Amino acid sequence: MSHIFDVKFFWQVFVTLLVIMDPPGVVPPFLGLTKGLPARVRNRLAWQAAVVGLGVIVGFALFGQSILSYLGVELPSLQAAGGLLLLLVALQLLTGSYTEPTEEERTRVNVAFVPLGTPLLAGPGAIVATMVFVQRANSVAQYMAFAIALVGVTLLLWLTMRFSGVIHRLLRPSGVELLTRIAGLLLSAIAVQLIVGAIRAFVTTG
Image (cartoon, rainbow, N blue to C red; front, side, top):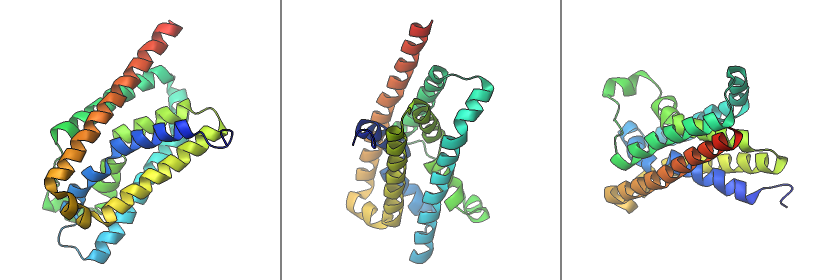
């Protein structure tokens, strides 16, 4: 089984992307962006946003490494930059510094694409983490684990948005806020670990 599917790598990717993309934290902005819309339209926007986020991340997973090679950027540099970006995302989760879009912005664009699909779901943190994991994967089992983890997180995000009204009523604003803060704390630990790993790689190769 380990030759087909890397369980450890799966959980690394799944947990990292889960805390970055923060399904509970998506509930308040999704409800705000779709306020007043019929349930049918909200459900359509939910799967559209999930597909857009997945598409953006897959695009960087497929072509991000080629771009890095062209620019001459090595993995330790990417890990250090990714760690710093993830730390910024973690601070946003911890401080609750999300800015609601104005009514004009909401009506001008399809909210499933912007800001839900990107940058809320497929933001800088998720993109950088994806590129780091693709760089680290070196076997079919790890690529398979990466793909399944990415699809699993996307499904969770879609389910969270699809049933956001129910989740919000069950958890209440204080519960959603608590889960968002916990996700920020976990993400900050992952970010620091990425930076530490990059420093070790620099010291070893230097």
